[in-house]
Image 1 (cartoon, rainbow, N blue to C red):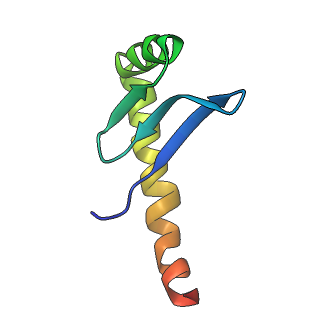
Image 2 (image 1 turned 90 degrees about the horizontal axis):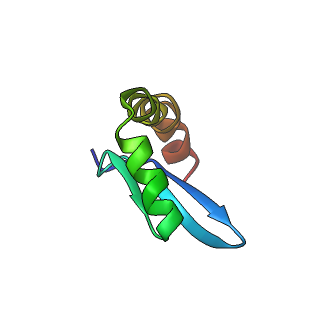
Length: 69
């Protein structure tokens, strides 16, 4: 439960929006980013895909990272 998957989208070194697995949704940081986050949050397939990324990427690799540390 303490593992968080974050996917951020940037343009010109400015964070536009991000998905946070702890929130379970997208959050926008600019006017355009808020619109994009709203669109993605209203699309269940995108949300399900991002949640699956946490399962596929983070949870499978956490054991490898802890062993190497």
